[in-house]
Every structure is written in structure tokens, then in C-alpha cells.
Image (cartoon, rainbow, N blue to C red; front, side, top):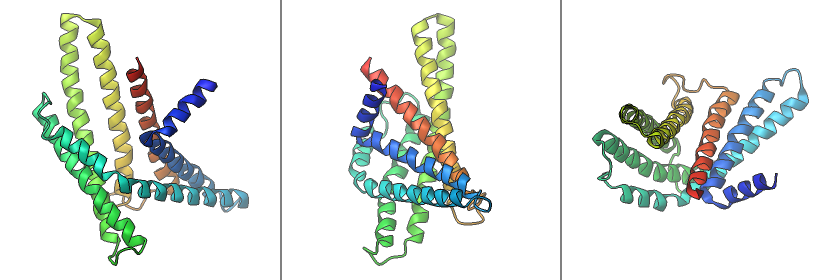
Length: 238
């Protein structure tokens, strides 16, 4: 029990860890709140609790939006460090990653403008900026899926070579890498489904998700992110 508490404290002390915990709590609250709100006609107490959880989820989402005001420089540092991906062995992975970085870099200022407009700090309409940020987020997710699928294909080829040549350590490492990429695909697909939901009405299933389904997709993605972060920390410690 004490080790679990200490691990949670370490997670909350880092910015990325705290963001993932807040994200999980945000979507988890929306999931539970959405389910309880569906019982509104038969249970008044469930309706009140459901509304409270949905309001709590909205506040956590706003909190994450404000915190992202300070993410531009870290994203820029990451983009500069990656550059044109000269260290990548595969050209497909390289250019998908470059485009992904561009989409991520453009996302932040668009979201900042939308937030500032809603806060009445600037006199522009926020709708088109929220739409643009959602499009960029969806583009980034789609590129991330394509990158993971490409990496999976390359890892599968390497695994076949290892099975022919032997080498148990290499095979176990490759399998771990492949599991990580599969989790990344699942996480991005869950987020992409929500991104499409937040697009203008008439685009695929835009606007058709109930609160509980948005919460479910976001919770799945958030839990996968927490698992990947914990696994990464364990690998760094060994």
C-alpha cells in the first residue's frame, strides 16, 4: 500500500504525470456522470450526482487547457531536437513524425487563441479557433496511428529475422516494443473518435456521442497513457 502511495506521489510531482492523472479523472468523471444522468428520470439523487460529476469534469478539462498555455516551448524543444528525423532508419516513419510535430506545434497557439477569446481577453470569435485546434489534434492522432502501424510493420520484419537467427533477448525486446505500439494505436483511435465527435455536425458521427461514451473513450486512452508512463518509468529505473 505504501509503495502504491509513493508511486502516485512521484507521478503527481511531475507535470506530465499530473496531467495524465487529471485527464483520467476528467474523463472518468464524465463517464460516471454520463451514466448516472441517464437514470435521471427514475432517480433524482443520481441526476444530481451525475450533473455534479459532469461539472467537475468540465472544470478539470478547463484546468488542462490553462496548463497547456505553457507547453509551447517544450513542444518547440522537442520539434527542434527531432528536426527532420535524421536518426530514423525508415523514411516513412521520419516524415510522418515530422508532420506530426508540425500539427502538434500549430495546435497549441490555436487553442490558446480560442481560450483567450472565451475568456474575453481578445475580441475574436472562438468557434473557428476551437475547430482548427480540433482538426489539428485529429490530424496529429491520425498521423500517430499511421506512424505506429509503420513501426509495427518494421518491428514484425525484425522479429522474423531474429527468429531465424536466434537471440531471445532481442525477441523479447521487440515484442515489448510491438505491444507498446499496439497500445498507442488503441489510445489514439479512442481519442480520434472523440475528436470526430467534436467536429461540426454532419461530419461522420460528429455530435452523436452521449457524455458517457465520450468519457469511456477518453478514459480508455488515459489509462493506456498511464500504463505506458509507468512502464517507461520502470524501464528507466532498471
